[in-house]
Image (cartoon, rainbow, N blue to C red; front, side):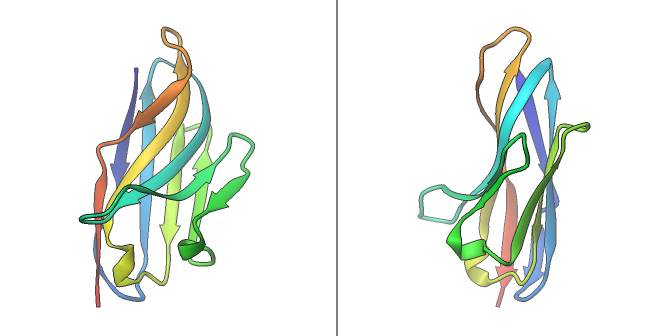
Length: 120
């Protein structure tokens, strides 16, 4: 199994910044894409940004130019730098990893989520 541990959420005023981190651990054989998703109250979970193992990135239109996803393959960690935050960015942010272990085939893993609240 792969465990994903998110950190870095919190309360920030509009226009502020936060940096989320997600560290993967376990009997990891390989991690392909990693990403961040978010879920606002009463809404479905949505993609925020993904990064492939080769560092190709993909962003939701709503965060382009404000958020930057990056990863440190040596640490099995993905980051999300969030700048110019808006109240509509509020939600629980979930880390996702497409990974395989020495015992299990490739599959998706999810973290527990970290709350981001942006006040107006």
